[in-house]
Length: 123
Image (cartoon, rainbow, N blue to C red; front, top):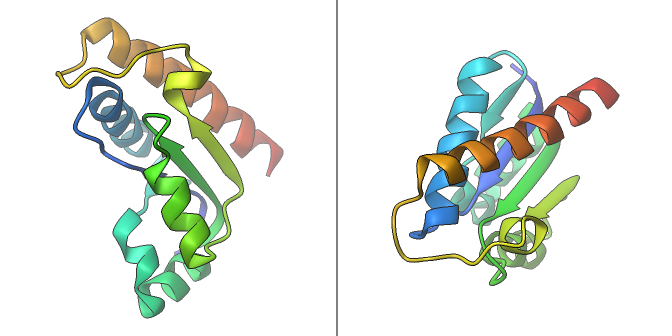
């Protein structure tokens, strides 16, 4: 199966990372035939990287903070990335080493839902 969009996120151990992970899961549940969550560490394994490129038309990396761990891994491995978001800057947030509030979860979900809808409508 080929997906129109493969979402990658850092699943970071902070409020923005957990909220982003939950938003990505929700988006996948809502669009199971169109998008999927990709395994971020797998891009460093050559056979998995080829599989990722084969099963996805587009790839989006979402970093939960300005450290940009995911983007750095994509860049180091030379993995093509079609879309990139870094949430703390994009939403003017400060990450905290705590679970996210329901309000933050909904804010991040709504932002990602709009981004994904635009990407899918343009591809």
